[in-house]
Image 1 (cartoon, one colour):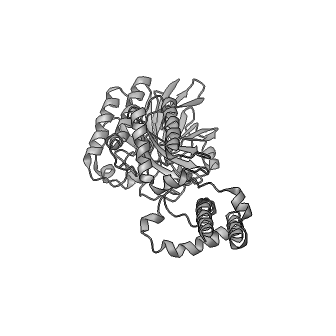
Image 2: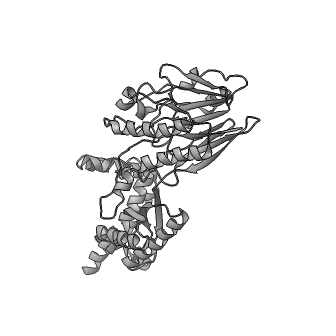
Image 3: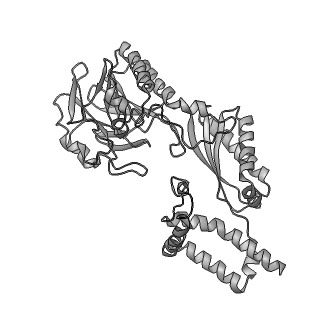
Amino acid sequence: MFKFLHAADIHLDSPLQKLNHYEGAPVEELRHATRRAFENMVELAMLEDVAFVLIAGDLYDGDWKDYNTGLYFISQMSRLREADIPVYIVAGNHDAASKITKTLRLPDGVTLFATERPETFRRDKDGVAIHGQSFSTPAVKKNLTTNYPSPLPGYFNIGVLHTCATGREGHEPYAPCTTADLQSKGYDYWALGHVHQREVLLDDPLSIFPGNVQGRHVRETGPKGCMRVMVDNHGHAAAEFKPLDVIRWFRLEVDASGIEKPYEVIDMINVQLEGFLEQNEGLPLIARVEVNGACAAHDELAADLERWTNELRSASLYSGSEMIWVEKIKLRSTPPLEMQSVDSAGGPLAELIHHLNEVRSDPDQLMNLGGVLEELRKKLPKELGQGDEGLLLDDPKWLAQILGQVSPMLIRRLMGKRGNQ
């Protein structure tokens, strides 16, 4: 019986992303978050007295030129060496882009798998055979599992692989493979990396993406950490997730339907934020808030969203003892429509209402709308079309959502003008 840790996607010293620099924002905390999470992993390894640690790629974060990152890593590895806990690493796409990876000599007790072909390291003490291959370039598009060796008889065989598997949203299609590819090798456990969301890809053999150790932006929400794997005397593996993160990102969706005053919306959000703090055992939190629903408070919120965002930040800093930070408020709410007025609308306004509803429910018409708006996008700053905040003009769902927000405002303005005539 033995234990080991399986981690991946550490991205040491990854820069913080898309966090507004406002007073009270955890800028310094985030800057050092990946190091602190990595230290938590080292401490967990020593506390659990594991036999070894596996890192399935992306230890570093791209083409870093600052050797302090590498020196920090070596200092942490010296702690594990003193505890007689070896570390086995495959280089991922970010590691392959790092000059540190190529030039900094690794300390005793740390093994980096070769890039030319898969390697196997036997641990006779535990009866373990660890197979792996590092990325040779930042973009490996071939299936690396093809050349992984056959399992060693009588050993607990582990494959360490940095892969997109069959493809995962938001991740480059590197070292693709299928579940059948993994099963065909006859290994007992696959330690996977590259996908930042924790996922059990296979139950037999147990094949796991542990996710990254620390969320760095709003697309990396929820608890982050590594897997502690226990192997019994019969060679059966059982994995348990162990959180390592020191700051946690999350999304909060609130329904503001029927609320009349902006301060009421702010108070409602703040109560829910406090609840998240309790659910996450007091860990510092960073929130992306999305306000939905038809409410009378919409116009005031939309007129000065920066003000109300800072009102929420102020309230959350006060009530959360500076443990909750609001990254951004996304206003998806709409002004309420007086249904009687809408129903009684006749002539061109009634036709417009009917047409807008028709477009929202028809993917083909939504795509036509996206094509028309594409000309407008070409005239806008480039950054408006990028990332999760970009203009998704080829996404019918996104277009329908935007049309749903715009339609009530357009109709209210037209009804107002008609009433003034």
